[in-house]
Image 1 (cartoon, helix red, strand yellow):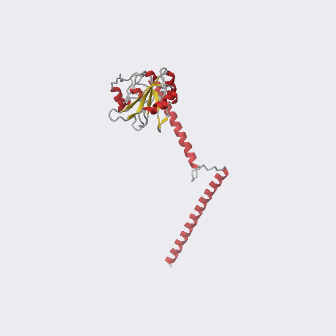
Image 2 (tube, helix red, strand yellow):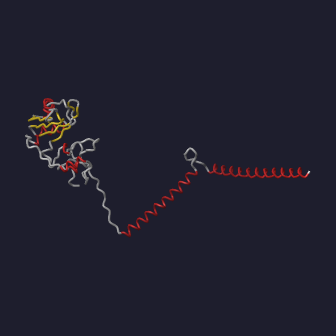
Image 3 (cartoon, helix red, strand yellow):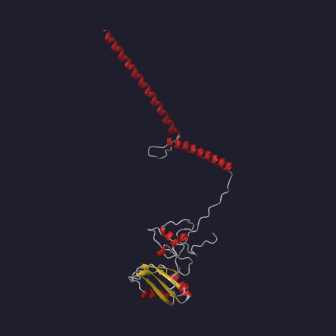
Length: 260
């Protein structure tokens, strides 16, 4: 953890494919392809890599003249190389700009990032092909680019730095007997909490009204409700006695009529 940095010092495809650099297996095929790739930097590239700026996400209409017009405000430019397709000659959307002074490239790195050129927001970073050890370009599954839709997120660069891993506490290894007793105590406590919760729930549901709100009743209201229930029960008993008496009278009258 003491050697952790948000920006990668050495390029590792497996580490670049992880949000915090702790993955042990590649999460997509591009990372595996970058791990199996054997890439050698282009020896035909000229210029000082420490003074070269990488500009990406360019518009197809952006030319070398437009780049020179925009980036010359930060200092004197030695050369500009806009990467084009070998067959069609169309721009691939990125370029390399070499400055003459170190302070010029630092100023461009600080101020030119997310600058709008030809209605496109550009991305600016130092050249990594010759300065970052183990660099694998994006066309081979590496780089620090990628899209969320394709799942090829890469971390460790300026656009998406690493997230610091979380240090989990190290627990002591207790004996088997102590762990067994601890589990039993934990289970008994959970059962007690469960029983207490059920008891509270049953008590609360008794006082819950139809609309789901808590009814705040006084002792007088409870006693009045209890008396009304007792009166209804007594009235019901009286009605049943009267009903039995009437039935008994009907039966006696029928017997007299039958005898006569």
